[in-house]
Each structure stands twice: as structure tokens, then as C-alpha cells.
Image (cartoon, rainbow, N blue to C red; front, side, top):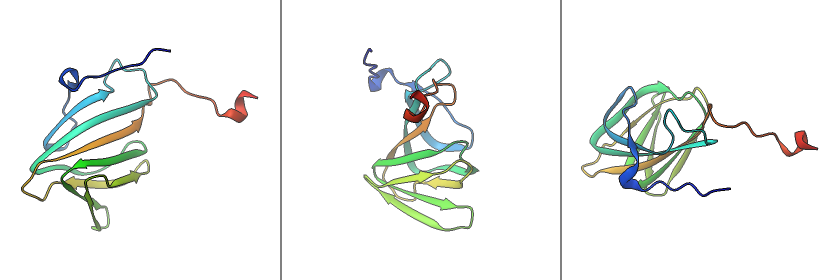
Length: 125
């Protein structure tokens, strides 16, 4: 089995709907990607945000640098600092905003609905 490598300078830029002041790149993902998990690196400039919307599939956030504020559908806020993580189940409504004067970076990790499906160990026996 080969090792897939993505060098940051070769990562594909993309623009998800409802994101403003955010510069994401696919480390693993995109239209032709067939892996089981997608990984995007999103850079939020000061004031950058992702509008309030539901996540389509279970999503993991890992803040790498800076501080980002998650707001849930009820208006609750959750401040994430470097190396803090959040798990959002499918359909969770949230917004993300950089309310600081410094840039922030976050990994966004999701299952790839177009990727291979793996059977559970019980199904293999």
C-alpha cells in the first residue's frame, strides 16, 4: 500500500459556500479524491468566518494556531485555542469566527462519502 503525501505548496485551494475571509486548502480531498477521510487546512484572517449552517457529516475541528469561536444554533459560544478540538455530529448547526486580531488555522477532518466503505471487523468474520 503506498503512502500518499501532500506538500502544503501543492495543496488545492477551494472556496466552500458561506465562508468569508477563510483560505482553505485540501490536504486530502477534492472531487477526484477517493480516500476514506478528507482533511482540509483552513486559515481564518481576523474577522474571517463560516456562516451559521449545519455540517453535512460528522466533522472534527483541530485548531492549530490562534483562537476561533464556535457558535451553536442556540447562541452558545465555545472558544477554541491552539490544540483544542471539537467534534460535531452530522447536522450540527454552527458558525465559526476569528474574533481576534491574529490569524488562526484549523484542520477540518471528515469521512469522505465518496471514499471506500470499510466493513466492521464483525462483518468480516
